[in-house]
Length: 176
Image (spheres, rainbow, N blue to C red):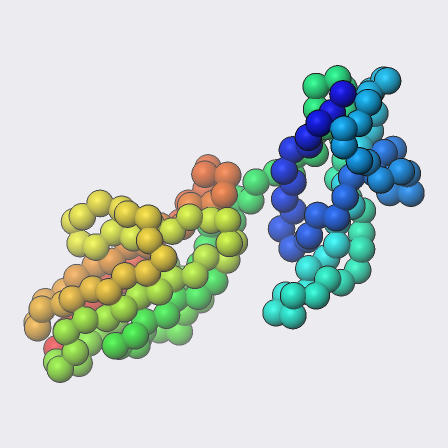
């Protein structure tokens, strides 16, 4: 008997329900009594970003359920890039591009700090930030002070959801 099913995730889609055999098959309700191996198919709805409304329904995914549990494992993302890199207090010298990993920022003499806010391309990626010779710490942004006439290096490590892929972005800060 099945009392629960695994959580499912598919980037860009909203999970709707499980169906027995195919999308046109009966919608699964729990608890479900298994009489034999059964194929379960996940129904997904394409997310429409920015509106909160759902778009076209499409069925993908599936697996077979034996007496233990259903299996619909969506592979974890290997995306380890930044979608955006914002600074407050000074501007990046080069326009941000996800493929570019090295940037510099020059603070005006009157500015002592700069706020750096990176945004990962994949929301399930993890961001770590390292200032100078410090250690990486999980963070979604940081405010960094820079002494006049000195340089400071900030590194942002993006680790993909599957944790096997990572990418480091380097920002060299300098204050006039």
